[in-house]
Length: 450
Image 1: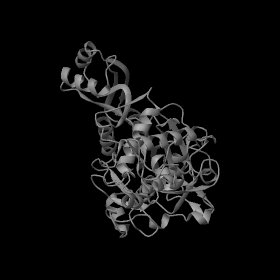
Image 2: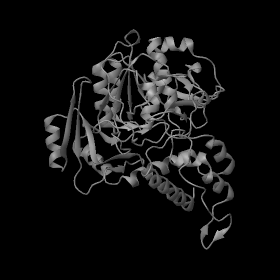
Image 3: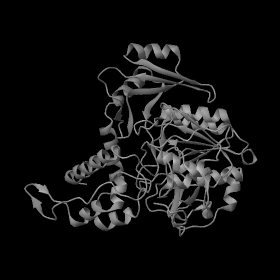
């Protein structure tokens, strides 16, 4: 991808983010950016001018969603990219992550692979006092200690020496204490929609009610807003990046689990839902250390299944926490992401034992934008479907984020991935062991989805 196209896309993205700041929510199918006015073909001075195919790509709603996703996520973009020779989904992913860091420079930087991480912070697992003294003499300082007895781990956050990048600091840390188990504090993204705070009220936690056959599901996401479809659900919310705040992504995922309003119903109506908000309304939150704390809280509540519709790079702290949760008999379900099969495998979906989920359309065809995990277990509807909006109403949604909760819902009833395999149906493309909850798709027209 040329520098010109790269800069152009970054400019478009910056405009989208600026526009988004003035909106209450980024939901539904409405675009955020108007058509991009560009000269067509040729060369102006020494600057190559974008070709008509890229002009068309950038002007389309699909491209606008790929650069700054809405709850609809990507719709048909891979075909447009293949025909135009325009930037790939992986290129757009890199641009999106770069823009996330650029917009949040005070709290984010990148690791050696360009992944967003917390600025000036590294995390270490179960350090002994002597090792902490050594790294202290090297300029590191303890910012926070998070003993998590529920997970059998102690996570310590260290500030890096002044003026040093986290990448250089991690190399220094491994040099002075080679045996120390350390990593970046990576930031994870929703796998199928922008996470923006909604101005409608947060759904109030309800007193624990008897759930359907004692079934409890946990979810790690943004906060859940009020919506009539969630009014009778048994939901408890807890914030791990500040007080929980309503978000469109979290609301949609929750509704697909336990929502119930007229023709709309989730796949686990009657189950108790535990919501761990790891964003607190900020897209720059959602780091590994925060997710670890959320997992510890959920594990203490003993749900049968935890859904994580988030994606990011491999991280030592998160891997340990996931393994500790699984050791307690709790199944973890995660989305594979929407940056295409050429993107790096995403986590936690790629961890051993995690039930990884891709998405299919109404015809049982795997979505072309779905990511490629290290292993793939199941597919579920993730397009041509509706989910709840903050406040009132429903939106058309697309992405693996919205397939994952359907698999989590069926898993809590089936009891094990092996039993879930028995109800999986054939599909087209990469669908793992098959399509689960194929009948769970709610036609957007039946509920007047926007």
